[in-house]
Length: 465
Image (cartoon, rainbow, N blue to C red; front, side, top):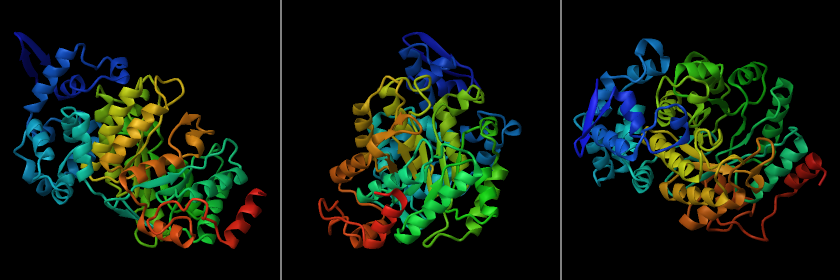
């Protein structure tokens, strides 16, 4: 279907819904690279005006990637909840934006309609929103998941403790874990990006995490962020797997470039749940996404990168994950050029994920060749704290020495918690209190915190310190 809008006697024509979505997108380098972006600011405004008049129901009938050609499209269409959609079915994209910002769209109401919202609807309405709109609506969305603790409760923000090491050295990893725990990080998970893909190395890291979590009796979950096929093999061999990790994208072709499909993810989830290692829930999946992944694989089908990203959330949603996060600035300036584009993308990703019912966090990050710096990340961190982000990363010194990119530190998590009076997962806060690492108000007990004797013994044993 062709879409049109006229501004000052100039008529702008958009070939189809896919073209309209792309031209309405705020500027970013990836869409310019792909030749999809609006050529002028006026064309972008015209696209947004035309998009505002599109009925939400149109997205159920005009798919952006053909149903027969893409299993993600089939998942979106076949899993759509018509009953959940009914309260908003008569709205246009513009009316949907107004309703989301109204007092009628409470946390409970937004939770009830989440399964009726398709990724394309979420992406479309985000393109009509200012940053403050994205923050305001996302803050109203509450998504709760559980494994060994409870993630996503209102007034709380979790942190993934990311103790990466360029050589997967157990001593270095253990030292980073202890550092993070002493700073109150790790309730989302303790998650290692391994430098090696050798199953023997991955298995050793899984055992290391299991030993630390078990011996210190930490109410959290471990994860080694390796390919899902490696994790499946290790599960079958009896290794202690808590969370099953995989990067996912918003098209079948992009997922194929990752070496996965939906059937494989179903198998992995079933295997993870069969381990029965959760104590308060069985959300076993952990997914990572990021704008530009489909484009970088030449698997975007002419879609703008933010709409592709929202479609990745449909993949994640199908598997009831414990955690999902956008690694927003990780791919590089070819996709998000500078701090302004990274900040906007981070707010969009968080908004779309929350609106679709996901426990979404953001790796607030940039690569060293992007036109961004830590002040930009401070800005995005603060905005996401205001928006109620589910979790962020905790990296020693904010500098990942294995992946060679800049993220957020243990101290950054302390800053945003203090600023917005946010606590951690309740089970984790209780553990920190028992360890005397936090005070009665769950604030870091500076100068008084200490690990118990058996934990100190573990540190000496594992690190030699």
